[in-house]
Length: 603
Image (cartoon, rainbow, N blue to C red; front, top):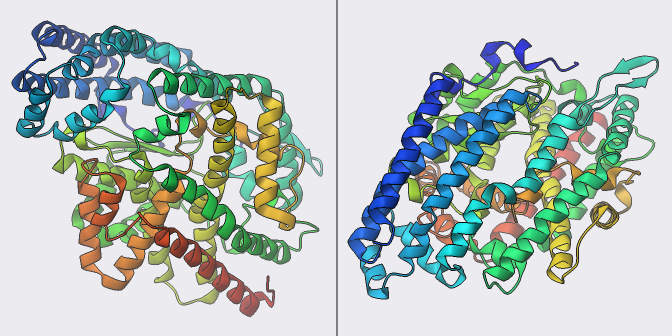
């Protein structure tokens, strides 16, 4: 169970970054070519962006530069994500980041000068533009919040420095923090971030699980002040930027890019907090009875309903599960899944210094790269399906759109990924009529998909909103404030169904999402759309699948409401969210009913 060094990981469990550059030398050569291209673009267009033709020509030329920058940044950045203890990888990534920051500073004139062009030329540019039309429209929308060209250039030059809070957090978490082993009944157990999150939180042995919880949070406690300082620097920086750019508050500033209303943001947090809590409390009580626990604690919430029925899954078996589950989306999607495995898009390995959790990073009209920590559990299969959802959206969006128009609003960025988790669950339920198997699949859906997106990330969102409220009033946050907020957060949601032990309030230290603006709440927003679209697919079949592919192909060409409409869902009302919460409740009702039939135990 102890993690090995990166050099000892089997190569077939790692991703193949040679799909970007065959060797590091080519990355540096590409960097030199890109810097030269930036120089030529500056020479050709700086001070010249006064006509529609010049504006569109500049953006068209800039697209190729953006593609090169993404390739370079991905090559160095993805390498360091696999091993933050490797100083050479970190030094390379820092060097690349510095070089890219310099290029972005030189290119900062583009947006600023475009917005100084006459209104008539801006309108004409939108009319004649093809791939950059939506980009131009969005830029015009930002006009009221743009600063002088000199100030924008200075902010671009400071880009690397503005990322320091997140860099400090990641370095602390993945390179500096050291966990001592813990002992249970005379046996010593190794401990680490991924070991705790991917293994011990799911451990069926209550004594081991709770001892791991205690040891994990006791170690986090040693780093709480550094982490709180980094987070306070991040949120106060965002507040400052909101003021500089003339937004009414930090919420308006952070929601602006997402193209959603404050009402949509607040609704997601408040409705789930109010209406989902009773369902999840019932689920927690069922877990307590099934496992015959003396009490239900925060350390016990990730355990399986039926741990004896949680089969081990190999990487090879996961390929079959995911391939078959997602085949409903068509042959091209199935081929993408096969390529992800055969061409080594996925880094499955578990090693010291590797990032925790999972993510997907895609290169325009190329392949994607997926990171996770494989632990031989069905939960890992759900993670692979989830991240392939992001890859699938990139595949469809890249085919149909220019580089400028591929990225949807963050509000719905998790819809394609969570849709794949739902499709995997529903595929599994069709493979057997056995009641125990069905309960296992449904409980996996609750404990993985819905718990992760509607509970874990939603509680993060509630806490994050409280932090921004403090900062918006001119205050700052420290470790005591953050811990008090998170304890209140957990206690109000779980009520008397779950005991929140000492240390659980430090859960705010575990997520990098807080350094990414208002991101956490979007997991539930995306899953709301995915749930409603999945129910349509179940009921209507191919027509609903076609609508879903249209949604994927649209990229970022519409706002969230427009994109959701393509999938046949109206997110301008609270009906989809209420319907999704009711659906979660119906799944828990069925799990409880099956548990009574199988074990004679009811919640």
